[in-house]
Structure formats: C-alpha cells, structure tokens
Image (tube, rainbow, N blue to C red; front, side, top):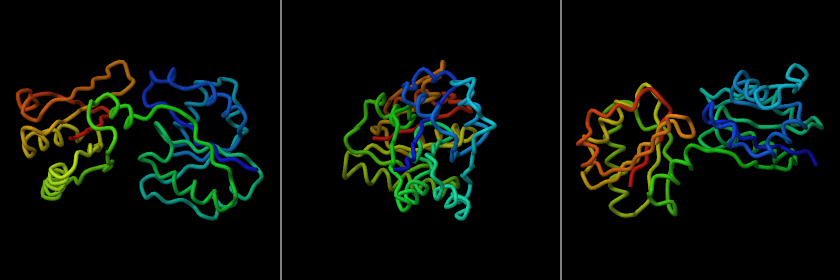
Length: 232
C-alpha cells in the first residue's frame, strides 16, 4: 500500500536534536514531498542529510495563504505509485497547518497515513504552562481589529467562567506586543496568561502569571519572535 508520511519539521534552528531517527530514515526513502514552503523543506533536508538527492526529488508547495492547492496536480501525485512525505514549515503537519486537506484526499486514494513524532510549539507550550492540559482549544489567530478582538476576548472570558478549558492562540510576531497590551488591559486580574516565546530555541522563555502580575510588568517586551499565548 502507498503511504503518506506526516513529517515534522524543526520549530527553531536549534531544535534539530528534537528529531527522532525515524524521521531521518523515512526522508531517506522518499523522493516526493508536499510541503508548506519548498525552500524551508529543502534546507531542512539538506541540514540533516547532506547527501540527499534534492534535485532528483519532487517538491510540491501548498498555498498557505489561501489554504488552497491545485487539485489536478495533487491528484496526479496521489495517483502515482510513490510514497509521499507531507511537511509543514515548522512543527507537525496538520496542526495549525492546512495539510489536513491532503490527508483527507490521500485517504480517498487508499493511502496509508503514518504520522511521525516530532516537536510542536503548541503542545510544548501547553506542557510547560502549568495550565489545564486535559481540556483545551486552539483558536489560531485572534481578530486583528480591536472591536472584534475585544469581542473574542469577552467570549473566551465567558467560556472560562463556565469551564476550565485552556485557550491557546498565536499571533504574527510583529503584532505580539499589541496583543499583549490588549490581553493585560481587557482581561480580569485573576485569569492566568502563559506567554511561551521561541520554544526550543536558545532564548526560549515560558512564563505563566495572573493578569494582575503581568500588569506589574506592563513594559514587558515580547519581541518579534514566534510566540504561543495560553489563557486559563
């Protein structure tokens, strides 16, 4: 049976050591990849397997911006007899990533789906937060415009008053500081906020405090770095 391998990618330049050997061995046996960014995928493969035949392999890039893909080209790839690797730009495929559409389509072509273990900044942040890991929800990006953002925060606050779910979300790095200011100014003092910056990188910084305590550090600078936010 043909197989679609879900291949993790590093979440920072320092996280190659987090990759299990099965990832290396799997990549060595493939010559066809569906990826979020071709440049990122090729650089990652070269970094772990310097002698890999990059030029002799096929790379198809998904359109992350529109979460669309060329259905005809993807179907042609899936109709071949090749095993395929599906790779996100960072972390695990299909987690905060449009790859689920490829998995769903591959099943209709009778592919066996094999997920491989690797790092995920979302789950690593949850692990380190000290917040509820039994029930949680991932929102992706919160609204950009302030009225919609405040409305969303009110909804999260209302949900937390009824349940103990941890709410997880991300932001584009250059908007981290704006979101941080909104969180500490619009949420109640008792709520807990975890800010997980640059997970697995040398400057990793994960802190969980109440909103009241974050307000004491209102000039705290997150920086334009990858960051996960968690509320409970």
